[in-house]
Image (cartoon, rainbow, N blue to C red):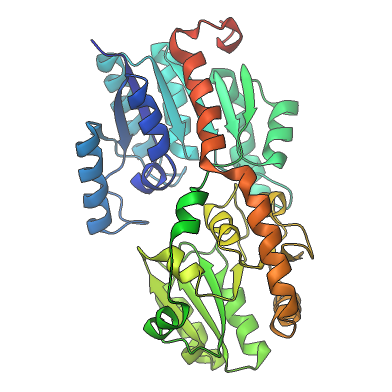
Length: 393
């Protein structure tokens, strides 16, 4: 009988976007893999995208498990319900180990694992407490994460700020730094695009200056500041496109209308041709207030785009100011963003050198490197033959 391994996250997009390579590693190692998340949640993915993901899991022979996780830590009744759901499943299936993602699912998973004496790997895709985070984030998330670190065999961090904080203050048996979830650089570079044809398809002219962002339409991704900066640029040839969907779509459209830049904003929704769009753009903007280590930013770098990014952890791991682009310090300061964008709009000679810098730097984050590191962690967890990975009882 095959040993069983559980992968869990609050929403299916976390597994589908960032953990399919990990699932493939586990399958290659001979595990029976199960995925537990809230497949009913439509806050990130559409019905169609979730159906495609479920089909993908089925084709791989991965069992899908519905857990009624809530995204909010304040949904107490749902948290309690999901705890008992998961604990009962773990008791029945007797997993060798579980690998958890996202704060709420990881909290529930580690509590259930502690109760069932199950080994745990936890990947923190960016702690909610960080330099400059709201005080409520520190009050709510920090003590929970610190306490639950006692119930964690391996804590994986994906940026240097989180790694240093975890090493200093947390109590997981092993704390590892892994450079993100990895991107397939070879595949990205192999994709060819007719730049002018793709821009025409999107409604962007050949002579326009094409700004691009990728990410869910929510407050954290901070797309509104770019729209406000767009109005301050006062250049109708500058176009801004966002690949992603979310609750703020209508709100962002209304902001653009009020500021008189409706014709310069393109909300493209969920895209399957994202690499082609990167390769048709002139500049990548990443204005997030909080990130772990952004796949979208790494993909933009691999496509040779200069990047203008907010000064937050993760972004500063990837972009060096004035080399791969520009870093602006205040995520609320639209005029600073205008200044950074103008420096590139008005000086095309910088594009090539910055793009080259980004292509070279992102090689360190190739999925082959990440894959090898993750495989070693999974191998160590199997039976915990290395006592260094065992929890102190």
